[in-house]
Each structure stands twice: as structure tokens, then as C-alpha cells.
Length: 509
Ligand SMILES: Cc1cc2nc3c(=O)[nH]c(=O)nc-3n(C[C@H](O)[C@H](O)[C@H](O)COP(=O)(O)OP(=O)(O)OC[C@H]3O[C@@H](n4cnc5c(N)ncnc54)[C@H](O)[C@@H]3O)c2cc1C
Image 1 (cartoon, rainbow, N blue to C red):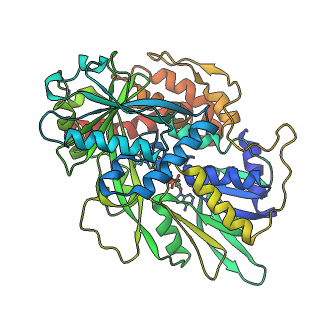
Image 2: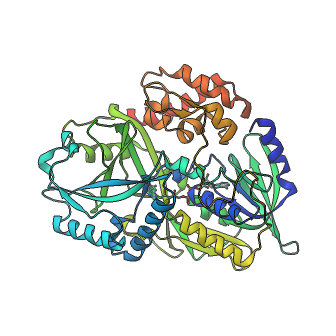
């Protein structure tokens, strides 16, 4: 879609009364969009940034049963997540791949080996014995780069991961349904609005940051799926809920992957009986995450020097060759939306809080708020909200696109034009193709979410010495039409962002 058709689409928003407006294009909003569209609802989804640009681009990408939540005996959540995991592995084979995980109990300190083994068997049972039986393994390839003497024998068990990334998984739910009555718009924020009881519809004020224009749109129902911003959006509309979000920051570092690193590794930490993972992902491995409470969402999305120091210290306890900040290829950081009662006062460790989700329907107005939610249970959550809506609101019955039967599951990208990037073996969908077919509007959208370039190549894809600047300028040409900036100006602005969020943070470590 070029700029002109996007402008027409934005200008036409006010002509339709949508059945449902979804606020937030993270995994919860995107998966719900798909489920409502497939039921024939007219739906408008808005995201103030890019799709998947919030917490859903910073996960471990695991589709898992929540093994670690067994530490609080949260058996119900674990059972529910195991069922979701297995269903996604069965139905979403294109996106969700089975993966062997390796737990590495410490020889001294850390959790008791017997306890870990018992927990893994319990976990396997709670998963309905559907995954491979946990196994003890004394010798494994990853010992090549680990301090072998620190670990008792490893224990393997089976989970799944989304591929090629969490952000692309989010996008996949949005691509199948596109038409005048089923619209997903990125870079378009909800700013305010009112509900008219007489007309029984919302008038919402939205601001498009690409065209710098403001619009009014109408919807019968609103679903607030704004992740860690859910409470702020509710507050703006005077919506009160019995629960709220507690915000827990999770930071990762990306390091060069060792050739012998095949399986995600799980280690006990020195901290609060927590665990951390080293997850192989393309040419890098992700190490983390941290778990710290933050007051406001914005601060939680920025990695701080303290996060990196902590992560490197923890990692170096296990590695034969210690790493320094200079070895960090990329940073990744998100904020977990954890559900607590409104009166909850935090004074413990956030890992002790349940990872369940909650859906709250307002008593007076047609407004639903989504709290919590994980990649792993996105389908269950979407079905729950869609059932709630279908009980009170009949769909317009938007016919499915002619070329498509109504799909239950997201589409794989249809044979995109592909391109190479220096130093990477993988071929990615080209920038031009992503701009045309995948609602990719900015250089950062492409490098960080349509492809994994920003996470796999040092300094957000620029290269350690800025050697890929010319390549970036070529890519940026595909997005010049969506903003006032020339390709060179886009690269300059991107470089400034990398300087502030990557170079300066590492230099302060
Ligand atoms: C470190 C870490 C690791 C994790 N690992 C896993 C894992 O391995 N497996 C798993 O299942 N889960 C994992 N999770 C949890 C999971 O990633 C999140 O719970 C999930 O991504 C939250 O999705 P969401 O859609 O609720 O929020 P988000 O992805 O944050 O989406 C909310 C969206 O709302 C938009 N928005 C906000 N305000 C407005 C507005 N006014 N107008 C328009 N749009 C707005 C934002 O731009 C954002 O894109 C992890 C989380 C973290 C932090």
C-alpha cells in the first residue's frame, strides 16, 4: 500500500461505524483482531507505534507451559499454559516450532537437583504427558563454552518457540483481513473520545503520526488491549476496573552465538531463586531476562547500564571465556503487564505474582479491558474476548475476501521478494515488499520487526563501525514516501537513536 492509498484509508475511517475498535496491536490485540474478523465483525485496530512495537517484541519467544511458575505452586496457570502451548504447536505449526530445552542445575548452590527433576516430571504430567519425557544427559555440545565443572548433569525437556520472531508472529495475525471494514493501522494513536448512549456508539479521536492528521472514528464496542498502557488509556476514558497492571521490566543482551550452541539453556541465578536463559536465535544468543518492578511503562523499555552489568556478571559465572560490554551485539527490553487487584501494594518479588490474565467488562459502557496475557495463551484470550463480544453484539457479517476462505489461523507471508543483508546468511523480505504488503512504514519498523537485522547485526544493523550505513540508506528509500525525511535523514535519525540507546548505554557500563 502506497502513501496515497493509506491516506485514503485513514480519511475514510470516519465513514464506517465499526463493530469493535481494538486499541493496541501487540499480541493480544492482533490475535483478537483476527478472531473477530474471522467471525465477520467489522473491526478497526489502532496502534500508536508499529505493530508488535511494545512488549510483544521483547519476549523470550517461548510458547511454554510456564515451568518457572511451579515455584509458587501456580498449578492452574501452568496447566492452562501447557494446554495452550500444545494447541498452538498442533494448529500453528508454521509459526510454532517444538524445541528441546536444557536445564543446568548447579553442582553447589541453586535449586536442589532432586527438586528440579521432580518439578520437570510434574510439569510433564501437567502437560498431559504430551511432550518428550524429561531426560538426564551428562554430555552435550554446549559444554564447549560453559564452565563444565559447575554443573551437575543437564536435564532436557520439550517446549516450543515462535519463529522467526515474536514481532512477526504478531503481524501474521493482522495480514489476512484487510478491507474497508477490517482495518489495522499502525502509527495511529487513540487520544480520547466519548460514548453516546443515544446512538449507542463511541466517537474516538485518533491521531495519525505519519500524516500528522486527526480523525474521528466510530465503534460500537472498544477493547482496550494496550498492554502496559491499559491503565493509562482507561484513566483517560474514566473507566474503572477491579484490577490493574504491575509493571515488571525484563532486559536481555544479545551476544554472538557459539557454534556449539543448539538448545536454549536454563540456569539458576544468584537472585531470588530466579532462572535465566541463553536462547540461540539466528547468529546470536539472547541472555536474560531481568525482572525488576518499574513505575511507568516508558522507563521500562530502556535498557540501563545496571541491567547490562547484572546480565554480564550472571552470564560470566557460567562461561569459560568471560564477555565484556564490547561483546554485546544488541539490547532488547520490555515490560511485563502483570495483573493484580487494584488495592494491591507491592512488597515482594514480581516472580511470585501469577501470570494469569483477566478480562474486565465495564458495567455502564461497551468497553472491555484486557489485563495480562502472554504469547502462549493469545488464542485462548482472543477466544474469551470474542465470546464475550458475540454474547452482546451481533457481527455486521463482513464477507471474507474473495481469494480467502475464512481462516482460523494466521497466514505465512506469501512468497515475498527477498533480499540479503551483509554478514547474515538468512534472506529477508525486501524493504520495498514490506512497505507494499506488510504495512511497514519506517526504517526502524523494518530493521527491528519485519526482519531481525537490528537484533542480529551490531548497533541496530549499522555495524560496529557504521559500515552498513549505505545499505541502510538504500533500505530507507522504501519509506521516504511515508514521512518528510529523505533516506539520508532517516538514517541520520536512526543513527542518533542507536547512539543514545545502545552506544551511550554500553559506554556507561
Ligand atoms: C522479558 C519478557 C519475556 C517474555 N517472554 C515470554 C515468553 O517467552 N512467552 C510468552 O508467552 N510470553 C512472554 N512474555 C510476555 C509477553 O511478551 C507479553 O505479556 C505480551 O507480549 C503482552 O502483549 P500485549 O499485546 O498485551 O502488549 P503489547 O505488546 O505491549 O501491545 C500493546 C500495544 O498497545 C499500543 N498502545 C498503547 N497505547 C495506545 C494508544 N493510546 N493508542 C494506540 N495504541 C496504543 C502500544 O503501542 C503497543 O504496541 C515476556 C515478556 C517480557 C517482558
